[in-house]
Every structure is written in structure tokens, then in C-alpha cells.
Image 1: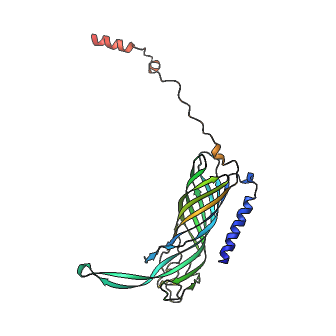
Image 2 (image 1 turned 120 degrees about the vertical axis):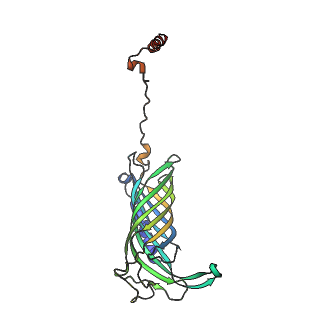
Image 3 (image 1 turned 90 degrees about the vertical axis):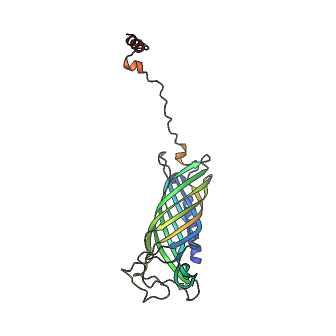
Length: 295
């Protein structure tokens, strides 16, 4: 908890320092503090029984650069986020048979292994947006390539059958580095140079939290931290987060794109004169046609 507070203080100190920079050097930039919670899980192959785990707390810092080109609507940027994510996996179960005859079926009650992973995430973001309410409201979507590094981890058995504790990382078994994609949407209310908003993001993992069987096969030499008798072939992690945001825009006047006036399309003043272009006189064709018909 103490380390978490130190990280928060460091982020705030960095924000204050950047806010003190001259605004002329960062006219099209914003810096934003983010914080929220959400859900997380893992996708195993071969499939395991898993549950979404609530309490995926996150906080971080976002930097955005807004282009002044009128045809480029949006921003690019980078986020630095600390997130507590994890998963719950049914490591064993008890079963009973219910029903009779053709309706007889097995009902399983699972006991769950719980793991928490502390991760630093680095999304590289593209954020298209539109303005509304006379530039007082910004509505955006975002897409990102996400890089991550797993700092530490803990495990627990929710049924209390085994004692939990610190998860010991092993180089042959565990992946500390990860990557994936994310997408989301949100809005921000502009109050002078301050932006207060809300956003939601889904992060889809492509890398595995556990190395596959080619590198680490079984848990025969492990303790209770590893519930997998055979290491999964795939084990990416996903998380969904909702976040509140408070940002600072380094430009008192506003973004340059607000003041770009697109030229109006000029209306065509001259009507096309078919008779003049073809050399036919008005009414001449009609009389000639009438004489031919009379004959």
C-alpha cells in the first residue's frame, strides 16, 4: 500500500511539473490523470472454468497531442498506467448427479484459485473525436496498441483449503512482458483549461501470462502457487476498466482546430444553355418538325 501511495504522489508531482512549463511550447497538448476500476480474467487453452474478477483498480497519466490540421480530427498520445488485474480459475470440483433417466445430468461445484497481478501498461493511443455544445464537450473513441510489464503477483485459494501468498516468478514458466490491443470510448467536459470526463476501455491480451508447454510442462517442481498440472498452451489476460479523468490543456485560447474555417463551396451562377451550345434557335426545331409532319 505504501508503494502504491508513492506511485500516486510521483504521478501528481510529474503533472504539476509539466503544468508549470510554458504554454507556448505545448499549445496543442493535454495532460490527464486517470483512475478507476473494472473487471479482469484470463483465457486458457485448453479451456478452463474461469470467472471475471472484479476489482481491477487502475490509475495513471495520459498525454495527448492534437493536430491543428482541420482534416485530421483527433489526437495521438501515450498512457502510463498501473493496474491491479487477475483471474479466478476452477482448480478442482465436486459433483453430483441430478434428475432421472434421459434427464439425468452432472452438476459441478468448483473451488477457485485466485491470482492478482500488478502490471504497468503502456498504451500507444489514437483518439478521434468530435466537439459539441460550442466546444464545451468532447466525445471520443480510442484505439491503442498496448505494451505491459508484470511487476509482482499474489495468489490465494478462495475455499481456504490451501494457504496463499506471494507468487514467485520463474523465468522458464512466467512471462513478465506482454502486449495486446485495446479500444474504448468516452467524453470530456471542458471547463476553461480543465477537462473532466469519463471513459471505458477494453484491453484484449495477445501475449500469455504463462509460457507454453514447449518451455515449461508441469508443476511437479512447483508449490501451491501453480495450480496447473500441465501448463496451458495459451493464457492471455483481458480487462475492462471504467475511469474518471481530470486533465489540463496547455492553451488558454483553445485548440487551433476550433478556429479553422473551411471555405464555403461557391454556387454555380451560370445555367447551362442547351440551345446556345448546340446552335439551335428557340422554337426552330419545333416548326421544322411540324412542317415535316404536315407533309
